Structure formats: C-alpha cells, structure tokens
Image (cartoon, rainbow, N blue to C red):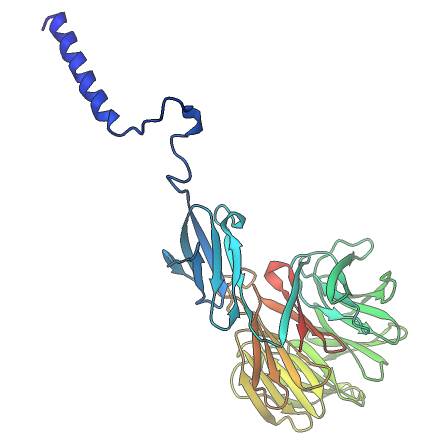
Length: 437
C-alpha cells in the first residue's frame, strides 16, 4: 500500500469515528462558557449513598423526599437503604411521632444510623439526650433532685449534671486523687451526712465525696473483691456494699466509715434492700433466681427465697410495703414476692436482659430497663436491637407504657418528686431525660 492510499484510509476512519462520537456529545450554546457546565453534574447523575439503619421500632417506614424506600438488604437487626442524591428522610410508624433529618447529616461510610421514635400521647416525654463518659453504668438523683450522678465503668470518675428549669446541664466529673483507675459502678446518697458514696470494683474501694461541695473526702477498702451495689439501713447506722467476686457483703459503720465485718452469702450478690426496721437485708443472688435473707444481728443467712425452679439471675431487689420487687436478667422477668414468706405473688416476662428496676416515689409504678438482645460475641458490642424502658403497675406488673432506648439502657432513676425519669444507654455514652405524667 502506497503512502497516498494509506493516508486516505486513515483520514476516512478518523472522520467516521468523529461522527459516531459526535452523536453522544451534548452541544453547548457558543455564547455560554463550557466551564459553567461540568461534564457530570449532581442533577444529571445523582450520587448514591448506602445507609445502614438500626431503628426502634424495627418495622418503621423510611421515606426519602416523600417516596417510600425499600431496603436493599438486611440482617442482624440492620437494614440497608440506597439514597440517590441528597434530600429529606422521614422515619414513621403508627403510634409514634415521625422524625425528619436531612441526608447530608448522615455518616459518609460504614456508620450505622440509629433512629428511635417517641410514643404519641405517652406519659413519658423526652426532654433531651446528653453525652456522658464511657459506659455509664448507673445513675442517681441527689436527695433534693437537683443533681444527677453517673458512675462510669470504662472511664475514671463520676459525671455530674444539675437540673435547671426541667433540663440538664453538665457540671463536672468527680475523680479520685492519685488514681487513674476506671471501674466506677454504683452510688449511694447519704442525706443525713451529706455524702456521696461510689463503688469502684477495680480498686475494691468505696470513694466518698461531699454531697454539697462535691469535694473528695476519702476512700475506704471493702476487704472484698469487685464491690457493686451500696445500700444504707433505714436508721442510717450501717452502709453495706455487695462484693461480686468474693461473694460477700462489706458492712461499714456509716459514721466512722470503719469496716465492721464481711458476711458470706454463698453466691454472687448484686442488689440489696433493707427491711424497714433495719434488722434484715434481702440480697439478690445473680447465679440463681434467688433472694437470701441476712439477719444483721446474727450476721448470717436465715432464709432463702427461690423465685421459681430452674435457672435465673436475680439482679436488683426493692422492698416496699411488705413486698419484694426482684428483676431476673436471665429470664427477663420482674417479680413480686411476699417479704415475710418468700411466696411468689406475681411474675411477668417484660423484655430481654432486664437490668435495673426502680419504684416511683408514690409506690404505684415499677420502672424497668431492658438492655435488649446481646451481641452474640460480646455483650459490650451493640446487639441487633435497641433496648427499652418499661413502666409497670406495682400491684400486679401490668404493662402501662414502654419507650425505646438506644444501645443497652442500663442505669435508671426517678426523681424524688416523681416528675422526671432518667436512664443511661451503656454502649452509647448517653443519658436520656424524660418528664413523667
């Protein structure tokens, strides 16, 4: 092939190629600057985003710019949705107030979007959510209801909030001088001596602060291993800590702070409650569905109240008007026993992993926190669903209301005047504040 013929064929192929490509080009008016028209605009080619949703209730509807979305995949309590471009997301379910957010506020990648809806017409109304330190294990009101104390299991100290006009304001974190230990678990407010007692299971100590000034006062050794719950006798003479690993109770003189004795309870002790005359201590045994009754004059177990046959995990116990209210974490039940005989009066399956129970000041309601389903590998990882808080009738445990929490509602408290309820989301470092009635 001579050069002249080769050049002709090459020119012909170039012309055909040019015409074919020209058919797929959007031509711009000559008077306009091509820089104003990017080759791929968001309007012409919407950017797509996959969001992973964990919600309560689980079956809520998701709308994007008014259009109902269907999940593209789901599993382990999570649902994945595909969004095209940016816009407004609405989450709705019957009986709940809808929640609306903009897609730009969602995580860019691999973040889980957590949505929980609030009940319409509920006697429990959300006033706010507040960040805390890592793993808020419990929460307590001061005797006047003006402060909240939040012991942190995975951080050094106790977060303090104060109430102002029905809302909470972070005040400070209480720490222990010359210590960096984590492991703060439970607390007790001694109104008579104006003291805050807080257990630290990793140091096997109880730390004491001035309830008014919040100044650190002293630390005392429990003599046991892994102290948890702290209670004080109605006559305020004795203060007792339950020791998880050593399976005993540390009994202190409330005035002198002296350790008087340790009482073995032949099981793992958790929650405790005194009889009104301060002579008996009812102890929840976590290894079983069992309450042991300790005579504090004889320093020994005098009765054992088994809730029911089989396995269980008694966690918290409350005494009120001749009855014991007991939570069983393993079975997810709340139970009412006759405090004299141990007879089971009522038992109700409430939810997964019932943790804390508290009685309203009026004595009419029992509030119970449910941590939800555990992660199959480790309970310190978020499980497939959110937990909840239940409001039960104290007479027969009839369910009155249920509200959703987030990842593992754990600590729980009701204000002394009965106007507010607060709980902690253990895995979210979060505190939720509700008004009641």
